[in-house]
Image 1 (cartoon, rainbow, N blue to C red):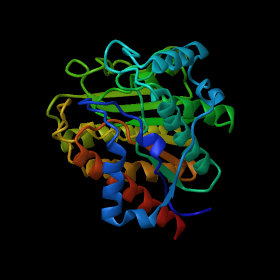
Image 2: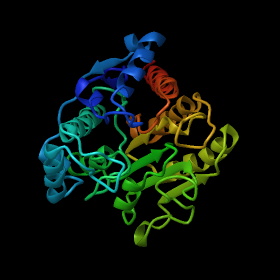
Image 3: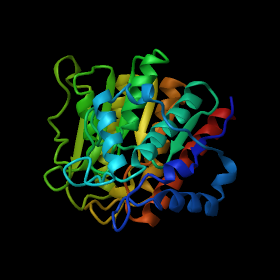
Length: 321
């Protein structure tokens, strides 16, 4: 097995973004990769292109009717795929499928032992539901990965950890009643930020009650509040004993992000990724897949995500020593 972390660099995923002054522009991919190069980390990881997800892979999470709706609306190139956040632009369906395909490529590399961990910058589209788009998210790559880890590889216990400022509602509600998906999400309180969900009493339903951990933070919360919440995340994931961990590393929780109100330092993402990598080493042979998620200040996302890669690379180096 290679001891180098895999990072996806692909013009097809870079194309996932929206025109004009939309905050989720297609320049986010290059903002990250320029910082990765500047830091010297690009020479210490394995860079790989992804591919477009197949229809079968997309249907591991999404319904066929929804896929047809997206294709039709994007071919028309007018209006929105949701209530007004996600424009139906020409070619967006192909770019969204490339995001999912990149995550599948990274997941397969980690499961297959080609890489100890992986990072996909333009991914973590955690608002998309099984049958709808939402919050700039067309297809839910994390949801697809969770389903494929089970169907293709027979894994039973998967953990999903989300530190985006926005609640990962598309993942949470898709698996709310699933006791084998350990879910932990630190986010800005939904009373102040889209999508308005993720209250502390949302802990799962039925047999899954207690397997979901939502930790809303008040506007203005900083490093001290995050670290206190993170201690609960670690305890939750430790108890779950996962066989694979997915991390959504949205950088919109960093201070100064335009649409959000948290005040985390850009260094906290690397710290959290390092802590989660240690958990992955204890429970699942180090198998950790990280995705970028949100983040609309380009400098913040570049620094935060490069910190994630640095932490994963350091963890892989220790494991391989």
